[in-house]
Image (cartoon, rainbow over all chains, first blue to last red; front, side, top):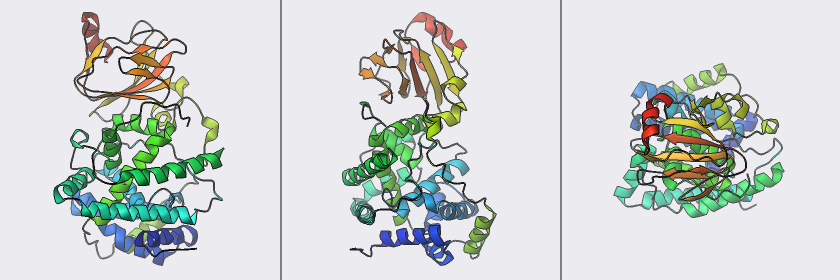
Amino acid sequence: MNERHTSDARWVRLVERVRSDKDQAAFGELFAHFAPRVKAFLMKSGADSSLAEECAQEVMATVWHKAQLFDPERASVATWVFTIARNRRIDALRKQRRPEPEDLTWGPEHEPDQSETIALQQESEQLGRALAALPESQRVLIERAYFGELSHSEIAAETGLPLGTIKSRIRLALERLRQEMK
Amino acid sequence: MTSTINHHLTDDLLMSYAAGSLPEAFSLVVATHVSLCDECRARLAGFEAVGGAVLDEAPACAMEEDSFAATMRLIAQMPTETRIEAADESVKGLFPKPLRDYVGGDVDAVQWRSLGGKVRQAVLPTSADATVRLLYIPAGVAMPDHGHAGMELTMVLQGAFDDDDGHFGRGDVEVANEDLKHTPVAAPGADCICIVATDAPLKFSGLLPRIAQPFIGI
């Protein structure tokens, strides 16, 4: 198995240790990286420091409890944490419910496919590098959209990011999942 | 589920939903469509991956000193995550799960109110920044001619309708803005049931519907 030591792949292994072993040390590493970013994300979205601290702790507690729902064939850990933080923001800051699509989950015996997982994690890293390489003005606009500083009518969807490849990979993962569900 | 969906969500809607900026009413239509459409599910995951990259690049903000210990206490207090509701396939009905959650059941649980001429609606409870309703239009019947002050997002759940933009069957969405003045007509066959989100009241062209508008709340 040709396992590359990308940082996204490392986060995946840590989440797996939380899921299977309730490994506090693994969780501590995830916490050290993601909790301060979730807190910054919430403060940029308008939370004061104590609300952001409280919500970041809740987001990380959700990461612990929902570790078995994380699917490394369809998302990076950062993306998964982002969706949890976003939902907490909608609930705590906007006081709205968040309708979510029906879950599509693998059966309980499913082991994530290593090569698919690695490929998806690499695509996520490429997306991160592409974001960092965008012209400043464009990058700032995307950040403001995701920090919730722009209303839906102000968000223009042209990101300039190579989203086609990651979308195709996720589409294939969904097809495999549908096959298994039949 | 099937590959017969021809009219998809726009990038704007998917990105706004991924970013968490859509009003709840529109989010419900997006979540309902994505439940049936793997194409949009994959596109949405792409936009969520951008959110992951933004989060990952964000400058960190120091946590309180005892934050990790406090989080471990929080974990101990939280009820252990309920088992993954392993595919509640048994409740396969007309409505995908996010819509069932708002209706409190499937189509037979909807509290319809008549709009006259066998057309019925049910407004679903969401935040006040936009409105979402179910519409029941008998096969062959036309919706009143109307334009929009804002955006209207319509998704077909049963039956089909036709208008100037084409034919819309189960799962299809139509995004209408100020420019589109349309008269959707329910196709022959099954009665048409749609979910419709609007961020401003509809503007009806005919005199009668305009008078009736304040009373029927559409």
